[in-house]
Image (cartoon, rainbow over all chains, first blue to last red; front, side, top):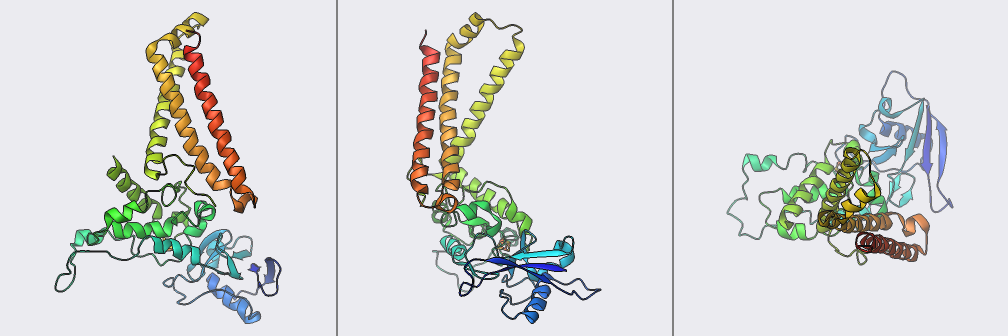
Length: 234
Length: 123
Ligand code: SF4
């Protein structure tokens, strides 16, 4: 199999380049893309990427594989490799630190903006704030996000306005707290989102939905927030 | 750097609502006009003139013209703040975007005043 790998070491290279590597893939096994990277690293220890849990929980190894974002540890090569070629690039739109390692600061800054924590100004009850099973159910499909950034970095609006558009990941989390029956900061949260950029730059092209390794649906969450904003306005 | 200063409303909710509402107005106007053209077998100059001398049609046309201006401005402003940016065209993008916005406003103003003149100028 031919692996075309994005390489960039700012200490040595004046600009990024693609390195073609012929790789002997063990027969009879459907490797994950992360396994391919480990094999490459055995041959060349300078190949850089992030990884940790290797089972789609930590969200570290988000990257662009043959043009589509995803987690390397959860993506079998049979799913992405076409005509025996695998092209690996860093997540698009974010500054590259080295090879497949990107600087996630812009992504986290947007996440920070939505106040990703429960706000409740009422006196806490003796034990814990309870929630009915129905209210708890409303958080399904929202809380599972692992912040891998696959969605936001596949979104052209996030590429164009990474400093002002919250992005699908941040907006999914914004709705996670807006939908939480225990949260009392709905008004403050909505107020922060009503400018023309934060959420309204979403054009609903649904790249986020098509790449999310957790099968979450940020576009739907964005629709819910927009409805909340509209209901509040009219 | 693009800010929302040049957007008149500075509010995404109202922009969103205005864009949808104006789109409906434009669509209804287009349907009415196409319907008129289809249902009128032969259109003479007099008929056409009569149509646009009707107060109802004049108001409808003016509302549509205003709707086009609002709709186009929100769309063009959005497009400009997406694509006419430092990351697409390098330094000087802010100046280019400002000139682009002025041109958009001028063109829309010409549409409006010209439409106004066509509707009432000769009456
Ligand atoms: S919504 Fe999905 S793709 Fe986006 S950060 Fe969360 S897990 Fe990753």
